[in-house]
Image (cartoon, rainbow, N blue to C red; front, side, top):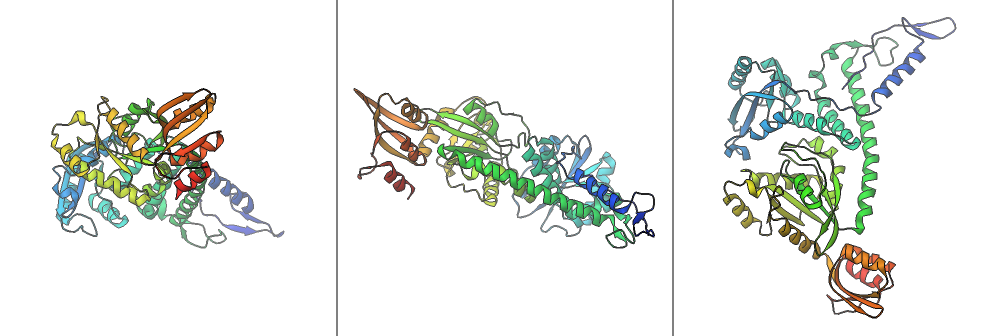
Length: 488
């Protein structure tokens, strides 16, 4: 982030009472100019380039004995994918297993010395840790290793910054970056030891540049939160306006194939790439389910292990689609050896975001890439209703559509609707939103036997029809009675 630096100046008072500052216009004008500069600085979000791009790096990690990675054959596999996504050239790696992390340097002293020799011998320009470092640990490691230290959160934030395309995503990423770097300002910028101001400067004598930078960051954070709040309200209104449609949201680990599946189901042209966090923005498309009708399908941002807390909080509004969805499709890369851990990670992040994942259908994707089908067999035993598909080849897509229709049908009611044969709007509405089992014509009368979502019952008020519930013994005399019954 850019920072505006003011040079020290002295104040003098003229005989007429006006104040001037040596070498600059009158103080009032100077402050006005300063305010303009600050406002310009805070005007719009800026997406910075990757700080670690095109650099040589050594990967490092401390694996605790009780962590999931302790049993992994390659604990640094995911970090390697993250940094390579960011354009980093990995030249070496080092892993230490410990019972507890060192509070000062995360690693033990001997391992830190070994890491320093490895980085120097390979000409590494930075060391990337798979752990989240505290500000003090980052400072201590930089002092010990005499090189740039980057932790897992910073790598993910850099990748998100490079992937952000929409205005909302840029705001979210910049806010997460500032919240992350706020307690780390002291070790980031070399000018922070300069002394600012003086007598009459308006901020007290001897104020450090660090305090000025902190105020600029705080002001920017406040501005970003205000803008995000406005965007969230707009998104919330859009989501609530879709209550007259059944909605389905794709969630899952990053690179599990959500965007590919969305393209296969809806024919959308969502960007697809074999890389982590290829897409960050939520996209919603119409999905026509055979023998059911149209639903809205949303593709959400992918998750990853140890996702930075600030990033999760910033992207909360992006996942509004998942929060209010009638059904979640949890897409899993079934060919990944850590598929179960990825499922647990997604569920954990959904819990943190306050998204209920009780009404979830597990989709085991990439079955065409399986070398050992026993992984899928284990998952299918644990998740009985899971559907195995291949979004790339289309295998299992018909089974997925049938499973989704069955799940959505649990929230539907069976109706017998009598209407006028010439009511084209009624025909269109039922063809779009209902599962019609039979249609009977009798002179000018048409009778539909169908299943309709409870959420759409109120829409029948707009038609001159008679309605009878077929899944209950109590006849319905008016649609208002049926709506009240359905919402209880």
